[in-house]
Amino acid sequence: MTAAERLSSSATTLTAPRPAGCEYAMALACDATAPAAARHTVRPVLTAWGLDADTLYDVLLVISELVTNAVEHAVPPIKLHLRLTRTADGRLGAYISVTDGGPASVRGPWTSSCAPEEHGRGRDTVDALATHTGTRAGRTATSHWATVHGH
Image (cartoon, rainbow, N blue to C red; front, top):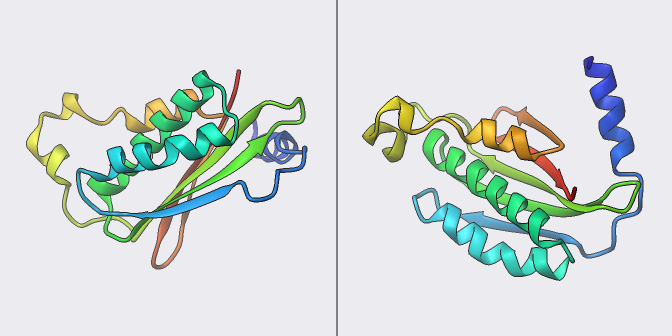
């Protein structure tokens, strides 16, 4: 698939209107507690939005992976942003964005403490679960995002 086809596909995926008030954002500590704190805090939000159990699980796993990557490979601040999405055929999902202060100059505590084969699969997990993924890098911040929809 060409870049133009991906852009076209991504633009047409979310054609149904999004319900009002279905966005959520939170700041996270830049430490090992952040992934669990994010999952714990957003689970009731995602449940209230009506995500089915499988989609909820996938969204929480993607959140965990993106937040872990920010903690391990970036500098603060870290902010999680969620938005309810709906495909043209009515499947609910979520747009997930984790914004950080950009790349860190040193490796994080987890990646520094273990062998290379014990880490490094987070982006593969995100790519496998998400409909679309991407990165937006700016002068003072980087956002890694993914869209996850029900099956």
